[in-house]
Length: 259
Ligand SMILES: Nc1ncnc2c1ncn2[C@@H]1O[C@H](COP(=O)(O)OP(=O)(O)O)[C@@H](O)[C@H]1O
Ligand SMILES: [Mg+2]
Image 1 (cartoon, helix red, strand yellow):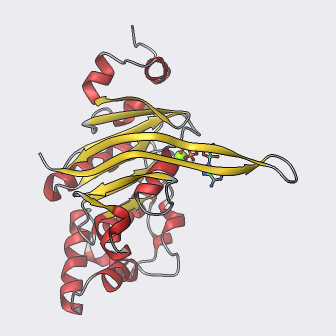
Image 2 (cartoon, helix red, strand yellow):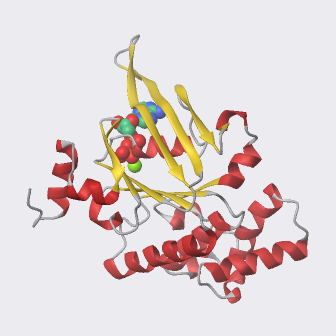
């Protein structure tokens, strides 16, 4: 088993003003430790405000930690170039309609990361784009379309294609299943599983409903007020939750849960 990502004592705090001349230090997350293996899925669950988004945005390089370190294949993330980080860890967001440039065709959206982060020729780029579109289940015809011509799920497929185009090690998905009806959720979940099967990519999936991610997660982390209160294999968390917060989450998302 190859460990891809190791999070070591990661903490983030920020100053919050509490008056005209005063501010106090607030913590977004603290003492975060976990690791992720190649081809595996880790889900991070917790109520709103528990620090999930801030944490995964730090892993994706969109924010910086106050202390601690993130290691990717044994190397400190802070020692890697932006290009190396971008190639390895990609993030997809809750609302693809707002993360995809409405003025760019799908072809343009998928070409940009290759132009910025690879040395591929135009012909090689074209091949990579067509292969990636097929990986996410879209026909090449879509290359000429604009995002607003697509359905919500097709926009998610494009966002996934954009994330996969550089063949990353890790994809981070923050609440992408929220707001989708049940059949679309299953479609997206099946797509994620399919891609993982073919490409051995690892996922970090942020969700607030435990049952949504139960069948796709190898590992589960539960966060509460910026701290990890549970960190175990998914089945262990479901069968023998250790933290009262986990038990509450299980109960609130599964009315017939008995314990
Ligand atoms: N730069 C910042 N300035 C002020 N508050 C922040 C900042 N970053 C995070 N927070 C706060 O940190 C907490 C965690 O937020 P977030 O990571 O969005 O949680 P979640 O994704 O679990 O809902 C929230 O209380 C949020 O308001
Ligand atoms: Mg969030």
